[in-house]
Length: 584
Image (cartoon, rainbow, N blue to C red; front, side, top):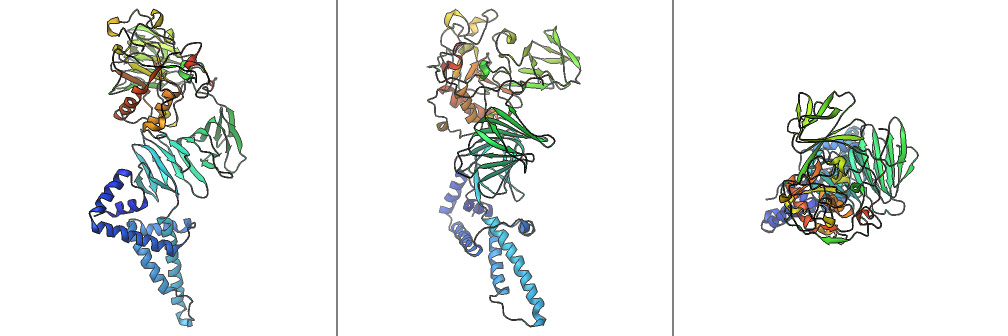
């Protein structure tokens, strides 16, 4: 027998494909369950015929919900149909003349009728609220609150006016409209689906990206926050709602950006707009915080691939896939001006001093790369195999480097076999949801790398690895995968056919590998590892392993990546990185 909740969801169309198939299999062998479905559908038709068109019922909604909350939809519908019959008894039309002494009864009848009518109006609003969109590319815990009741957001979950979407930690989801407009939401986002004509969304907090299909004449996607409103007719952008302000970053196109009730300003590609309660709207050329998005515009990390890139199959003396446990975590700690100063030691020899918060290198943080960022946002200390000793930071390898340079070269040669910053290529906070706009960093196992690059060197540009200090016996002697090699998905790979949807971690990683590629930035203890910041909102490692194991066999090497033709040359696949912000 179907539960009331299953029946409601089945008829509502909000079951995922697997659950719907299970319900239909149950219906095929259960006559009683089939009768339930028929009864429910009959009630739906009766209610639609009786209640007619839909209108606003906000003023009476809460009072009726207080009565009906806790009932199943089936019982509520039955109650409304019963009350409708009673209303017809109480309110016969036309009303007969009444004697004076019976006016009180008539008044009571009118009051009962009006109360019943309010109940019916809200019931119609409850049963048949308009569908506005659906959930897509759901990753893990996504909650949808409907009338204050939490529901589990699944793939193709039907969204209705008033639904509130909450994206939990390490989760992601997208709102998908029928015309293909997609709004990917990052972990921590909370949005409410609006009503009225067109597409309306209110963002309470968190980060939302947008890929908006061209809207019909006179229509627009409207995204509101506490501080501002954005009107969009078709473009790509990202919107972040933070404490006391709304930040809009444009990738392409033009949008209208306004304070609530204020004059709208045009914000164009390459610009950033900030709306704050205290200061109004400020539109400036887009600029990057080096701490959030490091390295120069011309850094290989930030260079998109070009249309002239030449691809050759990857040949390795040892396989780099399948992978298990693909992540190499980079932990980043931002120092503050009031933090105490401590020494940084490499193998007990002082390398320098830095402002250092107490939580830096906290419990369990000694493995992998640990990055201490200066309050000025322009340089970092990167430590490997580090620990705190009487307040000082002691590491096997420690290196100070600039966040405004290229992120490559001798400055970052902090350990044998490495030539780039640990931050270079690391997937950072929310990037796997809102878009990765840089190359990734791969660390293959030593047996997969060949030290015999063209010209007799152990590496290719942009790497500058010295053979001294490398244990040659750990590396291969043939193949075309070297330190500094740029791997990428060729343009012929159809990202839509990979099964990752059109947003979320799988899609964004694939998109980054096709538009920017991945550099071999060092070696790791496994067939392959990928640099990821500790605060990145990513699915669990088994799911990431599945993503990379699908992508890695499709990667090829960009054969003509060079100083003269970075990314292979030709028209870039993506816009250049914005300039770095100065004076932080």
